[in-house]
Image 1 (tube, rainbow, N blue to C red):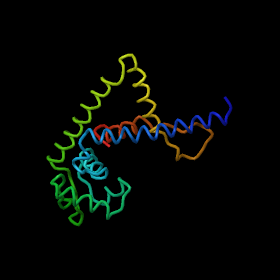
Image 2 (cartoon, rainbow, N blue to C red):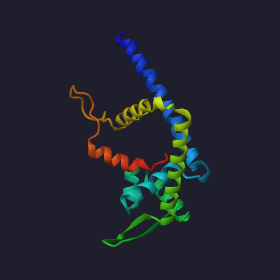
Image 3 (cartoon, helix red, strand yellow):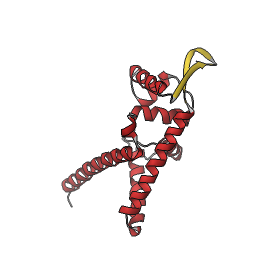
Image 4 (cartoon, rainbow, N blue to C red):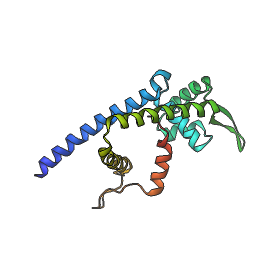
Length: 180
């Protein structure tokens, strides 16, 4: 194959992958019950972050989630009204307010994870032949590698580097229970 046809094939695969990933993500959200709960992606991400990293300020959450202070304030107000998070003064700096996930929030995240995992296990059993499970495992490895690749590094003539084991562990911990 020529370079042009390789580029075209890569572009076609990239589009198919993006569409399939979006459909898969939407299906997981639906099967986990997120669409019926009205829990936005930002609210879910904030709950997961608070569960995984502990209490945080609104400013730190906004920075971590790459959203504005206004967006995080609206998100936290909604989560508070649903009693999924609480806020209290930071004991080390009374001027700051720390937000933390409540037991109700933890229970909700667990329920969502169980729903997602149950559906996903059933879908694999129903749609992936046992002989294909190795291929599925390989596909997951490739997706993880694509998710971890760092294209922002300045070009050095080397292939873009995949995340370190520490970066993978941190990413996996955050994504493990995500139903996004």
